[in-house]
Amino acid sequence: MRDVVRIMLAPLLWLAAFSAVYGLQGLLCGHDVTGSIAGLPLPRVILIAAYGLAIALQCGVLAWLCRTRAAVGSRFVGFVSRATGWTGLVATIWSLFPVALLSICG
Image 1 (cartoon, rainbow, N blue to C red):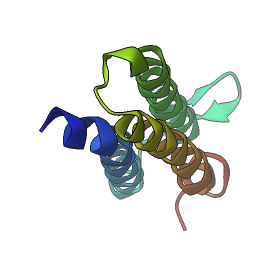
Image 2 (cartoon, rainbow, N blue to C red):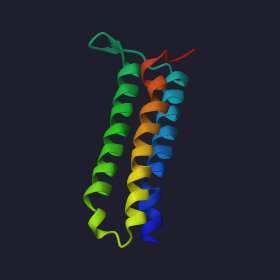
Image 3 (cartoon, helix red, strand yellow):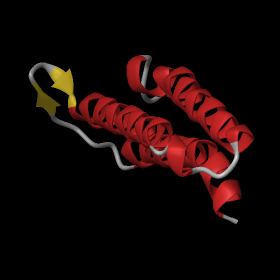
Image 4 (spheres, rainbow, N blue to C red):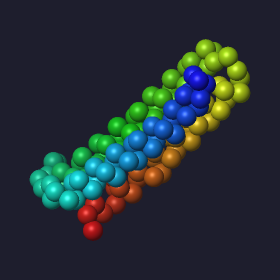
């Protein structure tokens, strides 16, 4: 069971981050959040922070997967878990980039 969790951890984290960031965008647009920080609209700052947090979490998971590979019983599980770790990181960067850096609400 640990092997399955290890392999699926990064894709599941991407799924949670994707849902959270796009849900946050919907909330920010739906409730008409206003204000600015350093000349940037507050919703943009919040979404960029969420984007950065998602990437940081994926990097942390990837570092953990690479660091603990000796604890894995199978070389196959170690390889696949690192591969899904990289996949989760790339998917997070690629799929959340538009919501963080392109137009926000309509």
